[in-house]
Image (cartoon, rainbow, N blue to C red; front, side):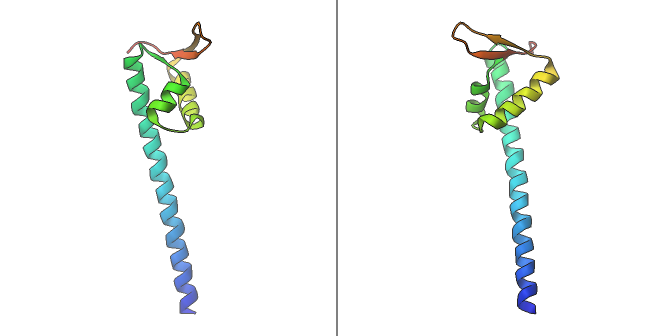
Amino acid sequence: MAVLEYLLVMSLVGVTGFALFRVAESKSKQQKLTNAFYRLLEDRDSCVSLIQLSATARVEPQLAKQYLDEQVKIFGAFPEVDNEGNTYYRFPKM
């Protein structure tokens, strides 16, 4: 019986540890996105593209898209398309 209890406790510790790791990883990616977003706003005259944000933050494009979509709604940014067909979002000047 003690062996089963030990295995149960160790399983719970493992699951809890994994969950905490995922939360920390998610917070780290959010911080990378936030830092990259504001850096791009400053460096790119308030214009940000999805690929710039994803590459600068070094996160998956899907995660960068979710973040960028949220910022577009919050700040009321609007899309612009350049001569090459690339889409940028123009945010209010800082």
